[in-house]
Image 1 (cartoon, helix red, strand yellow):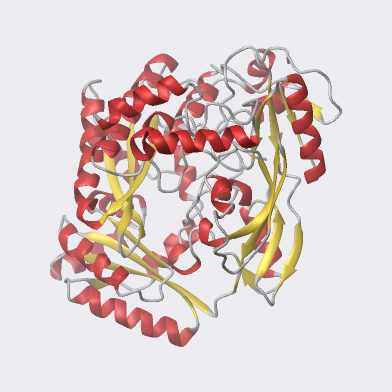
Image 2 (image 1 turned 60 degrees about the vertical axis):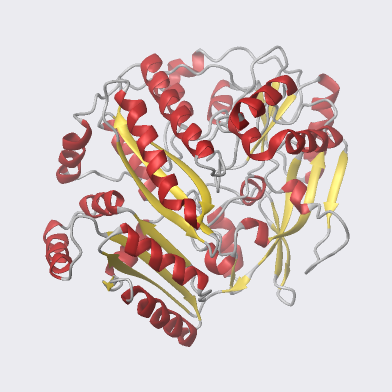
Length: 545
């Protein structure tokens, strides 16, 4: 069964070894373990539903609680401490696009706010129930999960948008195909969620980001049904897919999504290369990306993340041997780990890997084989379970991500880590922070930074601590010229910073699109952009000043 107050399946626990705990204590101090709230009394505290009765809507406390949160730090704090705040007044589980249409008509008739719910994996507040007098209905799309149509000739597959990653891949693998979209949240996130938040998978170098995979679909909006046909390409005006991509539920609910699929690769492998410094590593991955080699992944860790990865890996004797070998080859305390993925035909993979390793050697790269890469692949969707383990030892973990052009990459990484460190110092706390480039492009890279810090042990202080950290690093991203999100979306947490990126005219255009499809403003209010236009305008002015 899925955890109600943390990540993933209750039966899966990733244990922190003593060396890892000692590492954290040395860097940020011994954690303060809070007392977690219990589920039964929390359910008793859920307020009475304000919704009028409907046969598809469940107003039970447990259902509302399980469908009222994502995975943001604020979500975790509310659930773990039992300070639940606002919740949806009911949850519906439609089984067809027509039932979604019926629910939207019900919401419009009774002035009910609607929150679309996919896999509940949002880390930026997409699922927050808005405050106010208006009742809130969450529409859980998990029953819209079947493969509707499969076209091997066009290499297209049409799915219900509520299909989760593992189910989608299983249905495609039965036909010898893959979508190839593997975000870290893959086990629970859904196809529809990927589309409306512009998700990026770990192997997007081969398969493409979700905007390259999304070919068309069906959206139920308060104003009617929007059908987007599939074309290999089109010059017929505005691409309607772009109105859906990144819309975060503001125009309606994506109920069907046609995606471009690829035959399963003949072979796949992941390799580790170590560089003696960040300068060598960054120059190498830039040259590799700009060579446009047929790779599936490049993932570059900075020195602190490399150290953290090796420390948490366990196998102390083997890691010790690797460290000694790397020091002998000139990779010391500032070494950086690059993971390389090759997926496809064996001959093409071999040629691509040879070319990558030749480029890496010109920047003092040392090929360390496939052992680390195989370990990474095995744990690629399990590492997020460390959030549960760290909480049990009194530590919180959060992340931010952005993307910038190559000239800004190093400065962005340093600016984010510095802003986070200073924010925690103001609270008398130390921060363990590290960064990797999660997605590499010819133009630039995604900068993905992780923060580990001690919990205070009570809701108010921990919420204030997280808010200081989140605000500081988001301001740093905007100030250093980065997008406020490369892959997680905007939600409620990033909405105050979007205007700096889009400008007054851009925000106005987005608002007009939302109003066209949703005249009453019932769809996921407060997400992506602020609903108060004066607040938006003042925010733009402040950010651009």
